[in-house]
Image (cartoon, rainbow, N blue to C red):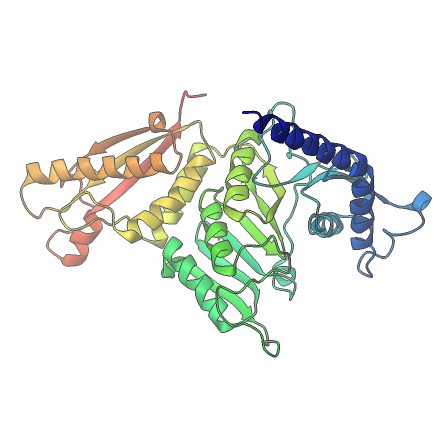
Length: 408
């Protein structure tokens, strides 16, 4: 006991000394990070951002390792470039965007670069992204430029991959993982393979970003695909270096925050740049049309004679879930149907269990259970002739009825 007291006092003294040194050097660290950020903006592609201090259009203020950017820019593409460059500076953990776009009416939308360690803010105190001129993602040609690691574009008809990858092995890795998510029939591969540098590592696990904060290539691709799957129906993720820019339309600021938190966790330690736009939820007839469009790209299939979903069925339902999430006030009726093979009572029971399995899957994809009701009709409502194989296959189906609900 007598020896432990001096040891504890020594440890306490070292701790106090460490805290004092950190506080004493904080202004120096902040100044150094601000200088690095300003240097990152001194580039030929942004020629007038690094003029004399009194004329500088962009100002960088550091609070610890959080950088706040203020000033005026001419367009959203310039803003994206500024935020991307500052977020990539080693030592900066978060970027607060207070930039403005010069417009004839109104100010630009503020946004934020967040990481997985950021806590959610009160939706009522955060500025809305809804505006007369919503943020537009870069054109496809720009997304496929050589500084783009990967662009993932999710729409009603499937997933599109764009970008320039360092090798054919990397391309195959991305395509295989994306196919497992949406199915080969709903995947469009527009990736380009760059000429490999002499002595370059050609394995999928090689790091594609220069930042030491980046995950290995395969891990990052898996994380981005998982984040995309949890996002809105029109999600787009652009991975460039050590920054991921998130685009898409969400029904509320709270929904945007939830998606950003998921993206931050899945893409960590890569930083996430928020370019989501809050838009009013679509009416029932529009969502109904979108669900039917998804069903035209694939079928909700089950294992023979059971209510167990097939991989293809899960992929189609995942796309439908994203459509339903975007309009949380709508109600959904899920209807199961079978062909006439077998006993009518057994078919009725099977149709009910399949409708319930669909609801359970959608609940697992964050569609509220209270919004959905299920019903089974067995073989009583055929849409084709049960005497042919094609007709029986058409009759084995799940239908959705979307309606305006009284929910909040």
